[in-house]
Length: 331
Ligand code: UT7
Image (cartoon, rainbow, N blue to C red; front, side):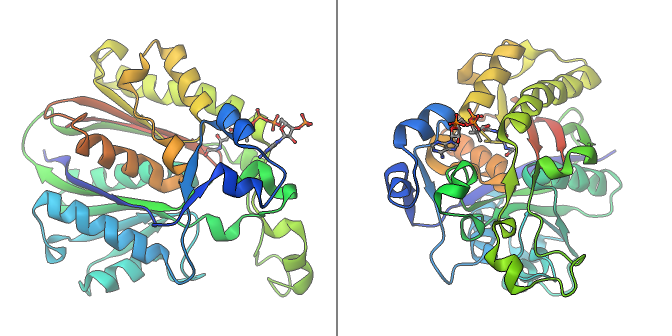
């Protein structure tokens, strides 16, 4: 049977750097609060005119180059994002057009912070069933334009950043190589604990001036509630992947978690008994880039030489839905 192996990773963040001090000028917050509660120091936000497709395309080019492949070698595209450059069609189609590979199927996944893990799981199954050979999996987000940048929205506004990460996943005949197992979960009972309600088609018409003028246009989160769930679901997802394959925490060379909050990452490390040097963290630079955070972290870890051939690596995510999951892979 074929296995699905990542052979190239890339990432891109917009040039504009927004510091905690910049946010202090927009809302009642402080560098100290943001650092202490989240670990975030800077994030990158798009300038007017930049699109999710731009970010995704730049990350894709880097991943393709590192994989030694050309756009025309890709036979399936999966893009995970919360938002879209347009209400429809999905970002995958815009990226495919930019890559100039008409006819190649493109699919979108809207599973928030777990989007990349879900997308990788889908890619794995298409490769295992020998449907496709080279799949491009992208996590790409623009969060900044949808945030309430007043004090009212400060709990969310300080957390999120824009960016994209990409992975080229290819079929290999090598046993015990590439993606070893994937585990996906959701619990829609908690959908409104972290969500963006509008624009919504349950309104007639689906967007009104009243809605735009209300604070309900912005994403909302019960932060502490989400935090508690994250701290228990990340370790559960990692342990599930280890148990399915007979490995233990000690066998792991690296954990690449979704970057939600440095305090969450540290709590997960402590719960599992993993030292922080085995966990990739870059939230201080980028904030929470939702579906893009894992592939950005993976690409940076690879650049820094922290990922070596044969390493056992666990990716884990938790986010809106609630959704969560893990991917265990042998690099
Ligand atoms: O991506 C996956 C999903 N997301 C997450 O996993 C995020 C999970 N949640 C969190 O990371 C944290 O809950 C936050 C970072 C969002 C908030 O940290 P917290 O320690 O849970 O703070 P809190 O919400 O309990 O708020 C504490 C205080 C409140 O003031 P009072 O009521 O104590 O007077 C807030 O109004 O901090 C206030 N606050 C702020 N102060 C300055 C909230 N946001 C800010 C802010 N700046 N940006």
